[in-house]
Image 1 (cartoon, rainbow, N blue to C red):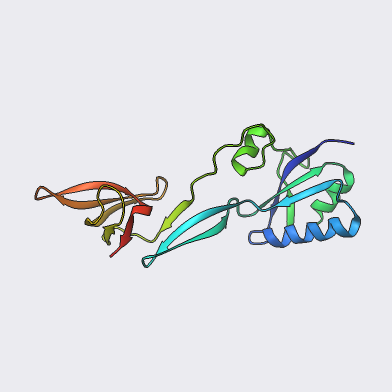
Image 2: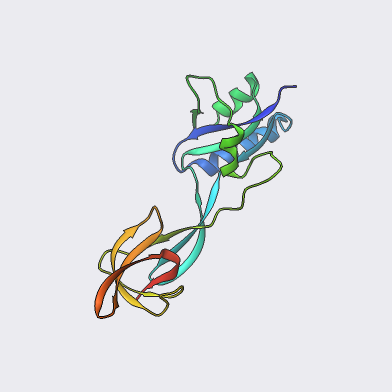
Amino acid sequence: MAEANWYVIHTYSGYENKVKANIEKTIANRHLEDTILEVRVPLEDVVETKNGVTKTTQKKLFPGYVLVHMVMNDDTWYVVRNTRGVTGFVGPGSKPVPLTEEEMWPLGIGEAKEKPASPKPKYIADYEKGDMVVVIAGAWEGTEGVVNAVNAQKQTVTISVELFGRDTPVEISFAEVKKK
């Protein structure tokens, strides 16, 4: 029997969970449990702060994509490819390319001896330039300031705080500030 690998399939956006359910139903109906081993929609924890309320939710890591752990043959290719909502496998032409070990690690599905530390949750905040915020943690705790810039990539805000009678820009993590 051939070796099972992880493949990426492209779906209609918003249909990831429906595609997963449809493939799992087909696996059960056609008794393909030995060749299609797992179907996964990669998720990440995201901490959102809106109107001073912080909550943790799960968001799709790759909207429009689903991972499938399977033995590639004509039957499994046909089943996955012809599932409602699937637009195709990721790879050149019609030939699916399995994920490499290095590509699987960030997704938490590697087979090596040591797993990397689980990633910190990503923060999403509703801060805008000109908003008044209060620092709730860290060295600047209790300080109030005005947002000068928001860096979603680094997950920080730059605020102006009064220091020695002058406005001074300070870069602070999303997790350490809240809207006033």
